[in-house]
Amino acid sequence: MLSANDLVEDPGRIASIVEHTNVDPAATEAEIWTLCQEVRDHDFRAAVVVPYHAPLAAELLGDRATVVAVIGFPYGIQNAPAKVAEAEALLAHVDELDVVMNRTAFANDDHDGVVEDVAAVAEAVGDATLKCIIEAPALSPDEIRTAAALVEDGGADVVKTAVGYDGPTDPADVEAIRAAVDADTGVKASGGISTFEGALEMVRAGATHIGTSSGVEILESIDR
Image (cartoon, rainbow, N blue to C red; front, side):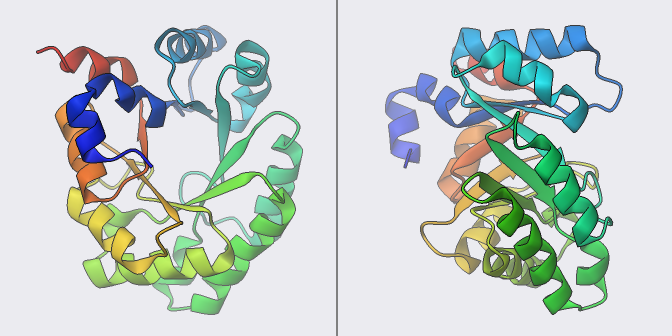
């Protein structure tokens, strides 16, 4: 696991945990070509795209980097069978899936519903890595800890902070997730991270993955 000390000694290693992202619903094929070229040029860990662009990203990246698609995006309101169908349709093209927690179930204190929703997707994806987005900026610290524990119980390999629609992620959000899950469960910080220092703070807080549309900017900020 990459530590903050590792990054202080060799800042360029941040690329190995950056998941370079374009999930704009209006993204063009040309923009996904650019995204994937940047992933290749800078050795980013992954490219994250919407389902429509997953086949193209897989074609462009091959074995060079991980391909990730979002499902149940952006609010997680789809029911479990819909998320399962979406996941199954993508497995031929992606290595990992970022699914949004059922935020409606969580808001209604339906904790069993949250767990069952994630568990259904986890079963469908099998050995593929499953990250689950809890939208931490919209939650209190206690709610963040509860949500993180629930999605981990459902089988998420990584708990992801946010899609970014409810504001940027704070290092405290990452700390709350890290405190609630097992040491071998990953934490993906995503939302408003655009500089190396910002990414470093997330790693110090416990992040193992950085999701950002500003991967290139993060690298460029190292020398400023």
